[in-house]
Image (tube, rainbow, N blue to C red):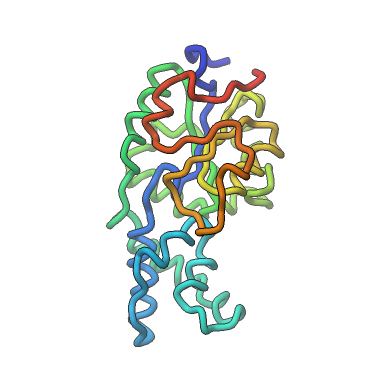
Length: 228
């Protein structure tokens, strides 16, 4: 068991896009390259940003609303390929994230990433940030047969780390993050600095804790307490 100070979790697991990383600018560059290749006008960041946590298909739908579902589905491989070229060129950590991760590490906690982004892209992000030695576990959207909101990826992360799910806390900016944590038996933190649609209300997700900025998670008492 971790020797983390009281309050900090033994293991903190994080969503990636919209939680640790402001990757919307990379996604915008990707979408606008695809639009330009088809002679279309660019999409504005504000119009795309709220869809980032929903994945490639949602961003393609926002960028090409006139296309039918089949046409948009056929564009997914292209989106992922272009995004890999743009990955890390424009994105930045949200303010306060690095300090929060350092606080966890100093406390004796381990942290990792559970994302619906394909694992190969998530590993590229981690490498680009120099986190290979800091990130204790990485589970992508295609690592397991299921992805969030199914609990399997969170349970797989706990399994790889050799801890019980209830010793972990999962942090994310989307309702499916909270749903996955609840199904996995993990306490959850919903963050409001990420990406969400206008009608989405984080208070309604029933997370154990709601955080409005990363600095709040510098304090051990801000974290929900697990049962481990």
